[in-house]
Image (cartoon, rainbow, N blue to C red; front, side, top):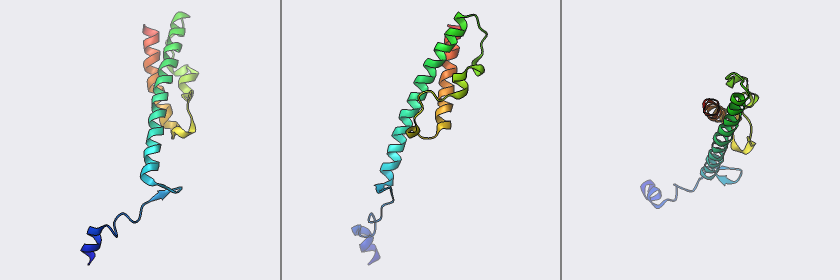
Length: 107
């Protein structure tokens, strides 16, 4: 009898985990999509901010000072709460900023 119920799907699939009325798999997928969008934003904005600041420092005969830049320290330019964890965004931003800054400063 149990085997018949399992094979017919009567027991399986009837209980689905939800969050705010939506299937949890959908919620997780949407969260992943938002994070991917946020990660891309952090990388794009961080790189361009770093490139700009590195070129500016070079053009104005300032020393290489990556960690002293406010943009690098704050690392939140472009952040939106729906992207998810701010610390993850900041980490991505700083990696991209450093790459851009180095390229801008060392042309």
